[in-house]
Image (cartoon, rainbow, N blue to C red):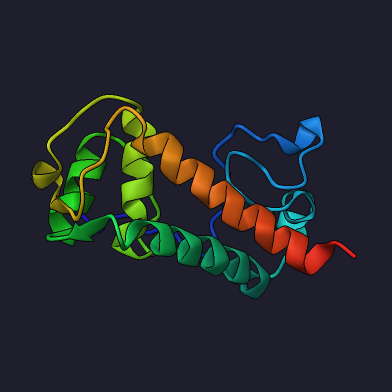
Length: 147
């Protein structure tokens, strides 16, 4: 049976939108408030531009911390654990989804086909990555949308 593949234009929404509380950048998906409001009106190309930006930010953050040893094993484990991730994005970005789902729960990275490139605290890594991603998104928003 063929695996359902999400398109790169799939929404990055996590269902925890903070723009309803006035944030210019969502603390959940890291999209800008106007992107969230207009998402259903955007063309596939416009959606892909946004997903590409978020993907590149995640790669920038994760590439110095982790290496994917076996992307097929990682995909299979994420599927097995029913962790939502976008199959069409760079496998390095799947680490973000794994840590988000795991919370502060510790797990052996090697069992997921991942190698740590430096020591990290499993209880804080999710928040560290999430905070860094939010800062990159906020800086990008500030650069292009503030006058």
